[in-house]
Length: 114
Length: 110
Image (cartoon, rainbow over all chains, first blue to last red; front, top):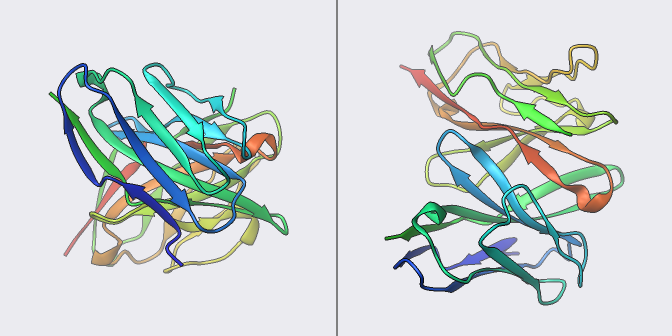
């Protein structure tokens, strides 16, 4: 049981380049999320998907797009990378079962935009 | 709007000393509160949730609705407790959005 898997683990982009961060979960969760983690700012929600076929903006969506490809996969795309998008990106999924909610995280993608 | 505040970015305690990581929240409804921990070079993982009223690795946290706080406590800190701790709030429904505080980096000094 792999949980939440993100690829790649590390990436360096030049300003203006595009890329897609991939995320997949094997826990059959309905909800999936993308966060960015920056020093002193904690985790900020970029986009989330409450269920397959739906996506919604979080706190910091500008410069990003997402696709909920199916129930398992939720990708994050940077169309034109900027140095301000240098960060560690985390994908997560969650489900509420019998009143208990828990978010499970991927191992993170460290992105540097130069 | 919902908000999670962790006033301490850095916290250092000596091994064996008590530790308290503060968390305050604002939310108009009845949220679920959590503490997540991130050890060096590892992914975030759930430490405990208020609804379970459990003790994990010696840590406890009590939800105080009057003070809107969910402070994390441990009576005797251990070196392996050194990590980044995040307080989080989940809004029931609406995709179970999770909102995180800015985190507190705990260092336990040997």
